[in-house]
Image 1 (cartoon, rainbow, N blue to C red):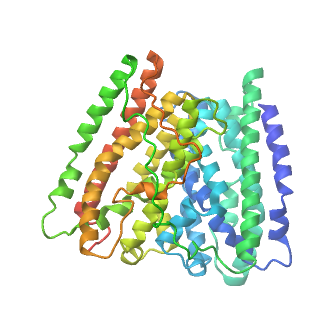
Image 2: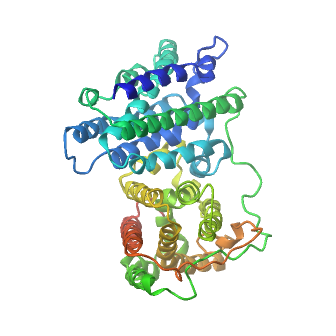
Length: 502
């Protein structure tokens, strides 16, 4: 482990030389400008709670090493609330002037935040990368702690100057958080005497270096944000042009697995999928949508539960793009996965447009910190984010394209009853108003991009061994269990009128 700690110390020194810190500490950079990079930090800083809660933590710690990591994770998961406190104290709500849809755009669609989204998916799959080995997990975690302390060493100096000038103390950027970021995990003493054999040492060093590369990329992105948005005084905006070209005819979506012959070895999976879909269709939430009475219009019904799906729908793009897609496809099945991903990755633009059509910005009245708090800290959105972690791990842990196609097939099939019901409501809304609801109306194909060589490849006609079937069955069960949980929340939110829809 001494070799790991030596690498950590070296990478701390390397990161400390990043140009971002020269800009932060320059006499020409006015206070509190260096602290206003928080929007660029939001995906990582707010998502760090999920990493600690559902990725790093062992549900049933088996030894002192696992317990040590768990204890550390409980403290680290509290930092997101400190981040939001600073966001408000620095006046970012007023400086950005973002509504809820602007904040969702920044988190999930803005080009400037793309690097953070890709790394965010990696963080959610770190338990796959370290194979749940506490020694490998320590190597990743210790590097994160060490590199985090480098940033907060510089940020706290700026925050202290801000406090001296204004009397406002910043718990996240200031010395309070720095005191928590010692650069070492609380459980380090448990690990320093541990020995790693040659293969595990090589893997530990590789994982630790991957964390360094991610942090370096993050600082590059924050520097670009500083130059483009802070130095100019112009915060990022979604842009004025329509997000969707409705004049385009659109292309039918690629839907592998919906026709053709099913190989005998895959028939049990088809049976399981059909059974779970039928069970999902009978969920009481759908009964409520169909029999909500005359007091609640179709428009009110949609407004009552759609905000609850923001993290799930908006995050679906990144799950597909960074966890399921193959960077270097080498077979027809790989290319089928990627072609399907390319279609699915466009759908959240339609959801955001529907959000605006439904008037949710005005109805909810959320500013940027309200939206961040709802997305990342609301107890009910916890379920959605935890399920995204599960899907990410299933994708990252299974390279076989047949497995990934079954995961995608299960995800899309679980959504079919949802869209059948939302389409009925959307049709009613469109018939009685001048609103257009393309996502809820199941017109997803208008967002698809033309393909140079469209594929229509089936995958259920391929033989599948017992191990592959077991993995695919787990995927189907996990996806539909998650769907049931989210439908249960939607029903609760709709009946309790959580969002105060009138």
